[in-house]
Length: 419
Image (tube, rainbow, N blue to C red; front, top):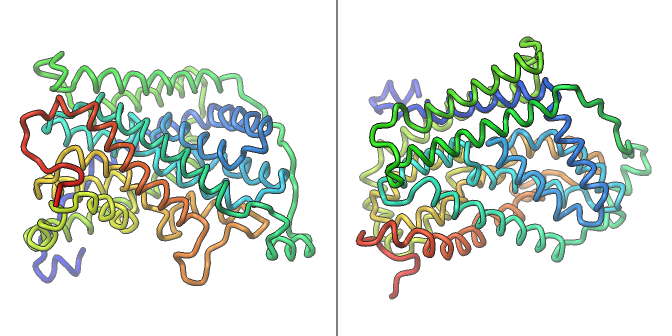
């Protein structure tokens, strides 16, 4: 940015609203983690997976999907990855299969979580086009869930999941590098369940306020604050209540793994998203002239653009904030924009995202590995299946049925215009 400023390039907008939402949610989750709430959720996850080990490749992504929707951040899935890897090994399944689908589904779920910065921003943009927060959720939740289920099923059916067939695993097993740890006994703290209920109460509060605050609902003419500020207040209040009621040591919150990972992500998003917005804002005319006619003629290409851009911008919310206004300025249908929204989850393309790196490190069988060409890793194919065709196709159907009345009378191209 310093070099760009020196040569006269005007800096873009810093996504402070996105970063502040992430920070507030991370603060609440970190307090819940120290109170034992995260251990409680992981314990329940382990019980579910061990009761149904044969379906680990399908259940693992479903678990991380709903945990991420609940928490608003994919970092919560980090705690479940060791459990997923262990259950897979015990069942003779390559850990790379459930780990890859679990990591990808957590990233997709960000575009369906009521309290994620990506959904909140998307809602604020779509309100001006007649699609309310509630309508957005009614589209993104079922469409992304269907995408996760289809992705998991295809990975299970199309790829060899037998662990004993992997030569690298057999070599590591002979060298004594593979260990079966078995089920761990987790001590659940007295305030664990309380912290989970407090966080859930905060999520419900955010949803209720966003619905009430929605201009399309018309319940409040002059709201005191926007949804972003409401999330900050509610999530920080949840963190405070958890600290007081569950008697949490605040020093432990700052030292928790969730807090460190979340704040590191904020720094990464700050730099990468700022640079991305600078590029888009300074080249908007060229982008319109170059891509305008192509996107208007083939609106589904918007999902492809979101998909690859998210790998560089490192955040679903930052990608949406940098590119969604540009897409709407090109007269892309709001329906197409919503249907393409899940494609901003392509953070797995480059194997640098924290949850992806953690999955590789936690798999001592060697099946979850990064190839020589960077892109040939076990997350790429499941992620592409989960982010592009299925969310777009299913969301297209849902959004057309749910939101057509809201955008009636607006002139915009259809999903797939006639030649």
